[in-house]
Amino acid sequence: MVIDCHCHAGRGPDLSGPWDTAPLGAYARRARAAGIGHTVLLPVFHSDYAVANAQVGRIVAARPDRYSGFAMVHAGRDAGRIHPLLAEATGRWGLRGIKVHRHDARISREVCEAARSFGLPVLYDVMGEVATVELFATAYPDVDFVIPHLGSFADDWEAQLALVDHLVRHPNVYADTSGVRRFDMLERALERAGPGKLLFGSDGPWLHPGVELAKVRALGLAPADERKITGGNLLRLLGTTFHAAGSRHALRHRPVPLGPGDPRPGPRGGRGGAGAFPGMAGASTTA
Image 1 (cartoon, rainbow, N blue to C red):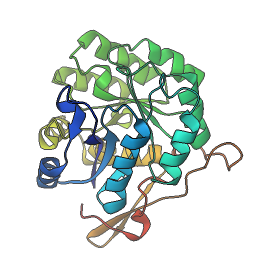
Image 2: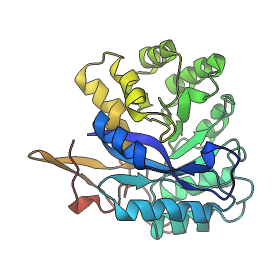
Image 3: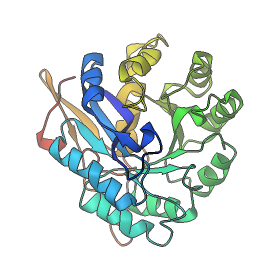
Image 4: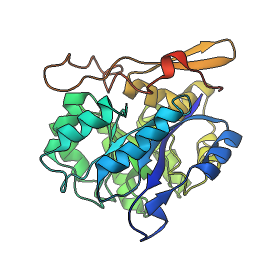
């Protein structure tokens, strides 16, 4: 099953640009036509991420066979309440990762420590500030970080080239493929870091999921390697297993730790937020 690790959903209070609103109607049709069976939803920019996380949570609760979600936090504005925000996002809404954006604020120790506590991966858009990856990747080696757009949606080839080095050197650093316009950069990342360090993402609904998936397919990988990028790596980070029964498929999961005092996450490969894809144990999706 192909899984899109990066798609936005919800509606923010502002009207500053298309990034404030992310309807899923056209995305769902395009994803289905492209053969994408499951999608991880991320909130849009918002003045209150508790509200934005609830929006995503309700979508996931309505279609757990089709969608999963990550919670978003503002490292600056939400300082001092990151843990309770994530407790609600994971406990009430079943969200299974953390999204942080440099546009809001730089990632903080509080965010990283909460990720460690809850056993969640962090998808952090560094907006080209790739050098900071060295800081949080080494300070929190037991937290998995996914850097979208290979480090820069702005087509900063120097930042993307620098991120490839971090992918090679840090076992807890990954990148998603969304919005990478220079195909040679994807090939460079694949050659140096290998298929185990890349995740397919579309940055939908604003980018076409079929177009973004075509870039991964154009890499000409062996089927096993392509499956890593189009879902396997994400499942591994989330501690989720892929179960096939005939022509139907389901994702099986374990509960997310609630925080300090709860059982610690397991070893890498089943560590990062056991409990991904709420409701999937008894549901199924078509590959």
